[in-house]
Amino acid sequence: MFLENSKMTGIIFEIVGALMLANAIYLIALGMHTIQLMEGGTQYILPVAISGAGNVIAAIVYILYADKVVRGKVGSKIHILSRYLIVVGTTTFLIMFCEVVADIMLVGHIPMMTIMLLIYVAICIILTTCGLIIASPKKRTSKKILWYILILAFLAMAVYNLLPAANEWELVNCIAHLMIAVFMILLLYDDEVMTDMGVKK
Image 1 (cartoon, one colour):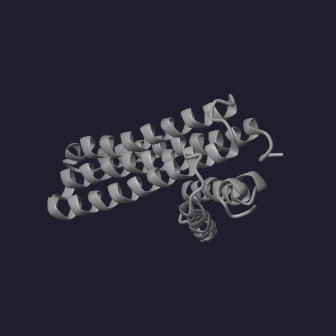
Image 2 (image 1 turned 90 degrees about the vertical axis):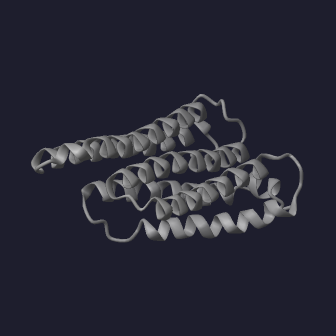
């Protein structure tokens, strides 16, 4: 039912996006509350706000993508998969960029943080490139290779999110991403997707 109905697919993404947004707001509120209890904590307000803003913006981007899927604006299953990777690449960059900026403001270590940011940028570029390759109408061997890589990646994502959570909010986050991992594995095994990516003739 979920694979054949794009509206249901989008609803899953919307649930995850809403959980991401709720988690981001909670983390900002928790950070601000902690600052109030600290002597001289006002110096941490801007870093906490920047870090939280990255998560909030990323969640909104995710929700906007989900809304397009619900309204049938994304298109075929292969486009749902490809644009999902692009969205993940974009949101990961937003989150990590704000995290790195916040860390630099808090602890310094600019060279180390710059290296970390470059690593995250590289990961985001790879994810976005994978999404663009999958969306291409051309038959490529790289698509078939990507299919196997994505299966392994989403299996790893599922296993990771089955690990014990440290608290209730982390548990909610794990459940949301476990839903995505399972759904994306099912989507990858869909006949239409497998045929498009050259895994099945």
